[in-house]
Length: 120
Length: 106
Image (cartoon, rainbow over the protein chains, first blue to last red):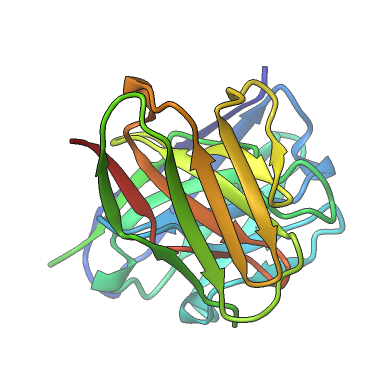
């Protein structure tokens, strides 16, 4: 069955970096539009970046432009989020999520999330 | 950017009640709207897409309606498992989520 499993979260100091991973199973990641979505405590989700089958990166959030990048390893069927210059306001649970079609960007499968805490 | 506003931010209801949650978009999004349910410590779960299409496996007591800028999610006959937070999401232009409505047991 379809599964997404995130890893790599943790405590990091302001200005630091972190790389999150999302391992996919039950489907081929490169055939789908997949996104990194975060949710700060008590807030609604925020879609950050997405990548489609053509490897084009789509930025949904201006706040992460120039700091976060999304990438994919087709051989490992995995998605990554490289986060640099982290700020306290980046503290959140980070999810990877899959859209069911190329042109429809709602999310039918989500990972369980990984917590990122940015604090000194 | 398209802003999504949900109301109310919370509501209290009894098991068996019918509740209606509202989501408003800052500009027209046609019917490019999804609804999710989220329980504490869990990821959001897709309920409705394209404003009114029920995701496979979701009980028929959930229904969605609306187009343009105003949308509703209705839960008929609330069950104990339905007490959760509900989010709307537009996908007409990039992706934006609403702030959520928490449905609590009265």
